[in-house]
Amino acid sequence: MFLIVCLITTYLIWKTYLIINTMLNRKSLSAIPQPPIDNFYFGHEPSITKAKEENRFLDLFVEWVNTYGTTVLFWIGARPFVFTADPEMLKQCATDLKSFSKVNNLPNRHLFGQKIIGTDSILSGGGLKWAVKRKVMSRFFAKTNMKEMFEAAKPHMEGPELGRWREQVGRGEVLDLHEELSITFSSYLQVLGLSDFLPAKTIARNVFLLLEAIPKQLFQRWSYLLSSDKTKMFALIKKMRSDTKQTVVERIEEMKNNPDDTIPSLDMLGHLIEANQSNDGQTSNSEAKVVEGVVDDVMTVCLVLDNMVKQICALFMFLENEQEVQGKMMEELRNTDIEDFNDLNNLKYTEKCILESLRMGPALLRGTRTYKTATNKRFGPYVVNTRNVRVHFSEYVMQMNPDYWPEPKKFNPERWQPGFNPEPFSYMPFFVGSRGCLGKHMAMMMMKLTLSVLAKNFELQQSFNKKEPPTINQNMAVMRIINRVDCLITPLAVS
Image 1: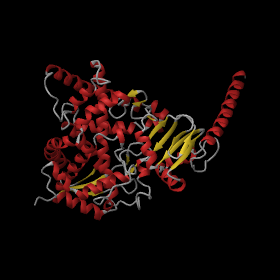
Image 2: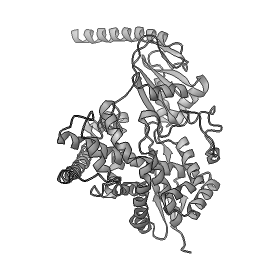
Image 3: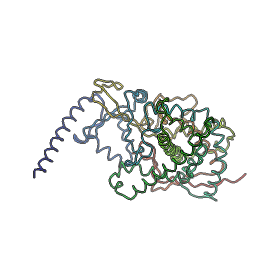
Image 4: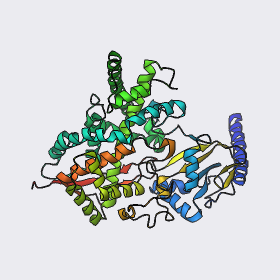
């Protein structure tokens, strides 16, 4: 009886605190526009939960932005969150690193405690250690290095990888474009100096399983935690990291034995080892720390390569109802000779299609920062008095704003005419500022090259399941595609 009374008393005290805290928070942030709350205790959570269940989470914020303004306040219980699609405020988020900090407890860092990429990788890290690492890797991903990378990637794509596609297609097959492209882009690791890593098909399959598992800790937390699937996924992650570690250790030994050798420009592994040698550019790390850091980074690269796969799949998803546009793109790809890197610049219409695909389905759908506010600190036109407010933004929502993008839901590559420059911070598929994507030039080069080789050798026609068509999962921060991206792939007749 005493225990029951204590529990009831504790609940009433907590509920009273919740009510008072909610009233104070809502008053302090009342200047920021907000949609009507569903109820006092849960705020906007019921609407958000329903939108997630219907896979229109981001579209809900599109509605809110179009109705209430480019910056809105929403509540999960008593906790306030700011969502902004205002270019000036996005600029503040991207450039004011002292006021805005990254959020590290994101699902691709760890899976229920099992390390995937951790919080110090080239993608997830921060501070001086991350800045030192990024400075080294910027040389590898520099636009000036793309010519040499293209010269290595082209014979790979036109040789063994094209041969694999021909073997898979035969006389014509309906294949999951996502599955096949995953193998292709995993095979590019050979071009990036990771030829001793796992076979491309194994990497592609492991990454697929890993990306399928990551949302489980968000949406099926306890059932997944207690399932045998979690045990299998832990074993898979450990195996991936163990195999990667072996490759890294071997490369470090090779570099030790040849200390005077310069790291080749296309040796990603060598650059990653150099990038992890020091946390501050002066003091050397132990070999164990170097190995651990490089393993984190290689795991990151494996996951990030999948973004290019998703982008090409999204392109064909958008083109399903734009067959005239698709025909024009395929014609350009087939009629344009690509002999050297500069020839990729002649794929002007294809580039427009890729840019439009990145607008409608960016690889990074949304992001978040913690605003380390002090009293009366200004965020855009608003004064914020609540400390450590979580600020959310979305490239997808920003790029669906009709104020900057007329007919935003229409796939229209013609909007990307020469001289067209989007409003700063209204188009950021690779993000911007110091955390902008290092590999954006490589991504565009690889996507163009892959599309060129495939178009010259195959007819690709969407053959989506009408009952379960592929669609973008709006509940995730990084693009995920629900359902198969089936295409009928037929070899072109040899002229």
